[in-house]
Length: 334
Image (cartoon, rainbow, N blue to C red; front, side, top):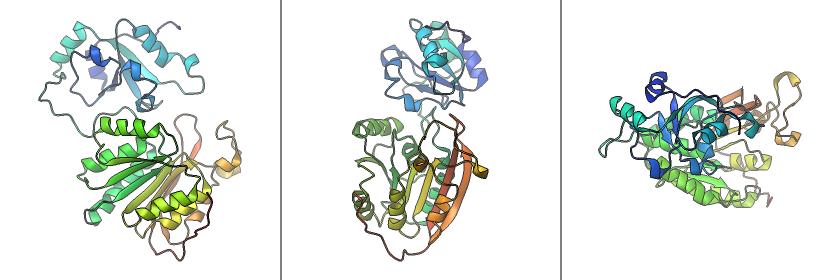
């Protein structure tokens, strides 16, 4: 284990810094809870299962550690050798869970009582794909301009579920309570993991998981048609199957929003120099999405940015169907 070099500070120093605090205490160690939207508890024993809830590599934060294993906890977050393919976390300092920390929390009036209202959306350390920040106001406008209904949003290739949970939470915070949010993924563990995630985020009643191989296009088409009268948005992030994009395009109803975020070739014809994705077929052409959605759609967002982990170029794309499709391809590709 590498020697711990992270500063050890008191809780009031963290409070003055105004950054997030990752509380690593086990549930059995939580003699009190924080009433602060900057504090998130993810027990140390759940780190692998819930690592997707950790901060991005560009977010400054601090750790609240158990005194007996603080060195191990700090080392895991700060030892670059343990995460050789990732940028380091921006951990500023750590705090020990002790009587003095509790006393300081009381003095700062950030100890929760049984009657303390929990803020909503709940505190989160993680950040969604930046495409969600552009998609959210668009969906808010859609919700405001349509009558309340069983509207549906689908995340194709949802993975851990951060993006669909973000939208579900934020839409609920805007008073949109009738919409349904579906995470679709081939991973069998997604059923249990994302439903548990939805429960922690307070959106379990609005969320459903669909286990599906998204390469089986007939199954995808059938799913989209089943919900066609209700679909308001289909989106995906860092997942590319070109025939799937065409199916989603063809099955979206008028007014339906398509949003996608994926790696794209660099500007000015420069070569792709990153190790992942490694195959050209897994990288979008610079104008590929604009061309694919040139007919019957209005492009609302088409920007390029760099991902926070490795600086890889990403195409952030949002379009809305403005006209009825002339035909729907029923080519079987399962």
